[in-house]
Image (tube, rainbow, N blue to C red; front, side, top):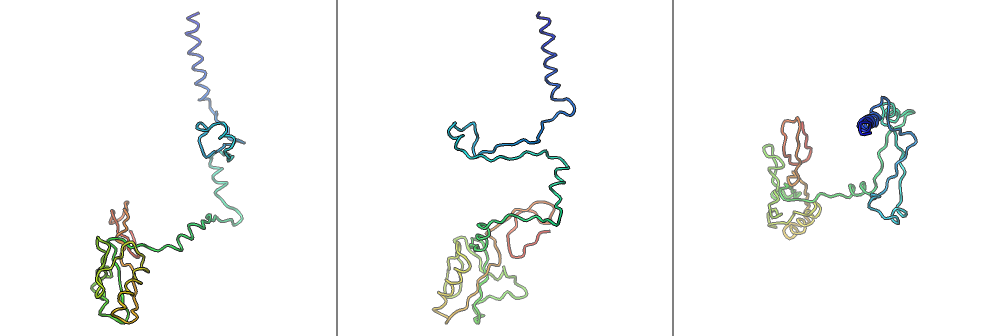
Amino acid sequence: MKSNLKTVLPLATLLMLSGCTVPGSHLPTDDKQVINTAKDEDQMTEQEKANTPVEIVNVYPLTPSFVNRYGNFAGGDTIHSLSNPALDAEISNYEYVIGQGDILNITIWDHPELTIPAGSYRSAEEAGHWVHADGTIFYPYIGFVKVAGKTVTEVRKEISSRLARYIESPQVDVNIASFRSQKAYVTGEIRQPGYQHLRMCLLLS
């Protein structure tokens, strides 16, 4: 009896393992469905399972023919991205907030003595006003101005208000020459990998 068991057990094990290696064997996916829930069922009580909404999802085999069938759009169909009204509204209302290290260009129209000209030998960054570590810039007549954490519109209004004591109806224009408070790390086959300070019309090659 013991010798028979020693013979039968290895044979049974081999037969069970061979079931996984029979040519052409696979798990059918036709007409299969998966139920997705927002929470793992193992962590749910019976009451939670009964009250939890489920989403039934069809399962399809990922084969070349399946990919081609759904990848080719006949009849002039085009792919349209889903709209995101919340994101679109956020982008349309977005205003950049000035940070430490940014460089601002400030122009007072009809008062060139208050505007540092860039000239042919000075770039906009070199002629701009650097935002110091304490978040301020210095401007003639009005002294130090807190700009970090504010938008360009807010800075323009503050400078105009403070200059109004010295200039009648000052026309102030403020823009950002360099977004040095914002950095991106770029890697890959480019000429200058590493940290890149963001600025207008930044091109990487």
